[in-house]
Image (cartoon, rainbow, N blue to C red; front, side):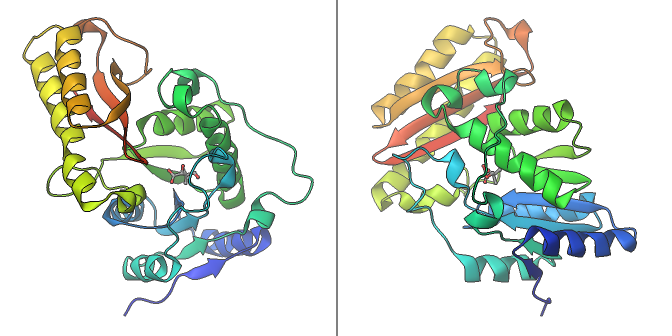
Length: 283
Ligand code: PAF
């Protein structure tokens, strides 16, 4: 059996633990999470193990990235199962601060990201989100001081925002994106998939199929607008309320009008009942 990772709950305890690793010349890879770990997170941890000699996983459900109307209270919390998964992967340290350790009384400083955080995708529908993410990720980076940090490509705009954050603030962390892990039927793994009813779970596969279909059409030379319109229609016809279904430049997230504006990425966000799903694929 793998040993349980060292669980740290205060910044000084985390710093001591990371310093001890560094004294032994470790390169430290951080995997930031909000817990409710699934195979997608496990793949982030495995990539972290390849990119660093020691791995820290943070588990913190960050209240500042949820709007009051969102699911902060209901967000799945599966601590015992999470620790068992991390132990099985040989994770060294779990950073699990309480809200009072992350945002102590009198906390008054926030990071306000621009550039990719204002691309008109997630930010249009969740205007509070990237401020909360950038602030907590900035703190996670300075608390843990990793050499590299691994983020899933499933949250594609978030990956661009934290990459820019690390660069703009000279945080000395290399941000690495990790490929989306999918269920056998194509649905991207997400902690929020547990909200789907069995019927919605069946319907949810339409998102990936529609993206793949539009990507295939664009690759085959079809004009972007009709190829995307068809995908959007398929998604709406399946019963989703669509927030966006767009093709963007994969590096800048800028809108595109032609095949020459690539590399291209299709990004989608849609609501099925009360569950909001996001996903993306390369064209
Ligand atoms: O992607 C997530 O799980 C969260 O947004 C993150 C990066 C851990 C910040 O809270």
